Image (cartoon, rainbow, N blue to C red):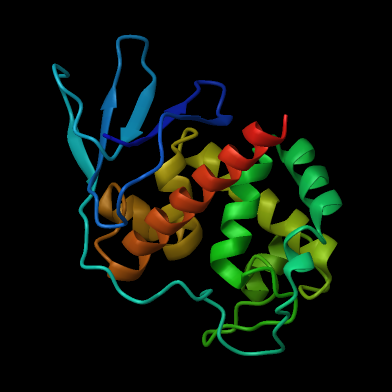
Length: 215
């Protein structure tokens, strides 16, 4: 069965994803094109009979990187952690007009829902905020779950606005920084960033599926 992820980015700068089917492999290239209504689409199945299709992300060899990006600090291995911060995620999603599933996906990839972890470069907490970013987002305590989630969601909204609601560029900028995305006029050619984008998209899809199944 052919499977793909389709992301439609609305002109009102709200990130919208329309799932078609689950991805078959983390190695799949991701393609982008703009339809006749000016909506940008992303898919890992090459569209047929479409003009202007280009590769947004070139697939890389898979690596055993299912672990969260954060690497130091206390670990919570209880399954309950995946629902423990639901109220804060809902609050952030409503406040910054982001899909709950998108925020969940970023947290999953960044920290695997571990509050106290710190990365090798000093990023902190659930959404792995660098100290400068945290301060700029009004976060006083990056290890406070509510503050961290609200700060990370606020930063995602700023990036989404800066990149006209482009889902993939928003994800890439959260990982590599907006300057890198601007310099490369797209997803930077960094293995880590390209794997990061694909992982976030994959979890986003799974959380969207779970939301749909629970309705």
